[in-house]
Image (cartoon, rainbow, N blue to C red; front, side, top):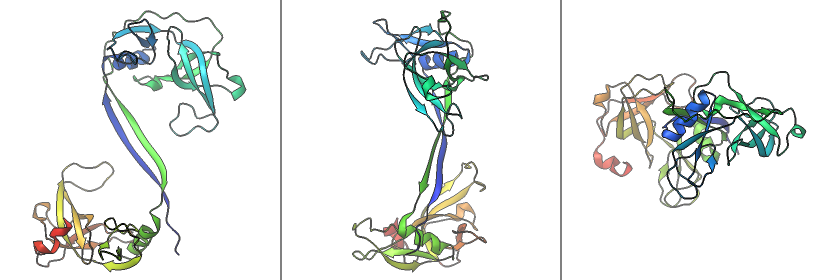
Amino acid sequence: MPEVLKAPLVVEFPFTRSLGPVQSAFLTGLRERVVLGVKTGDGRTLVPPVEYDPVTADEIRDLVEVAPTGTVTTWAWNQEPRRGQPLDTPFAWVLVRLDGADTALLHALDAPAPDAVHTGMRVRIRWAEERTGAITDIACFEPYDGEAVEPGGHDGAFEDAVHGIVAHARLDYTYSPGRAQTAYINALSSQRTFGERCPSCRKVYVPPRGACPTCGVATSEQVEVGPAGTVTTFCIVNIKAKNLDIEVPYVYAHIALDGAGLALHGRIGGIPYDQVRMGLRVEPVWTEGARYPDHYRPTGEPDADYDMYKELL
């Protein structure tokens, strides 16, 4: 049996969110080296602040400044920092109850070793040199043996407040396509397309899944399909994707390869975008060294009759 493929895969995108008045004040405060909490109806001060009381669900907007010094309430040692974490050397994750607050803030503590950290130790904020209005404006916490710092009494009103943030979400993992799709990918490298036939319903699935999604039985019989196929449906793309060197507008289509019982998707080229249509007969175009078709182009054959592909829509 051939070796099953695997490869590292990264899914990454920027997530943009707007801020309400409380979070806007909190992050703007960090930019100005001010830590703000919010006071509840029963007198508790919550840091980080929230817009609704977690106990009563009442709306809360009464902002109050707390000190940049505090006490570690619990901690965990991080021996191997990961990409994007606050420090690139071993550090402790800590929950710190800042002086004047009744809840704890999670962040990193710059400490030389685990035996230098303990619950109850005093710490203070180390501010980032460049601050933009984000939690990373707190570079980390650091040990502190001085007197508690009195807050300045800021009321949370700022000029040029931060009203939105961009969080960069990223997931790194190793992907394995499994036995069936490994064979499919290996065949593509020789410019051939294989599916697998269901032993029950006899449909040929491309790309193969290793099991029939309709009957739920395992598939193993390989069937070569194509190379030509029929456009079953399509869309016109008018927004250029980042890092994709294709000029808009272009057409992305579902293509039922000859002999396949399921349409796959691919880009249509070699024809003006406004001339692409359902039933158009197309064939793959390969570039040198590619492991999959670059796009599909018209074959010049007459369009397929609708009844020939309607069940594949």
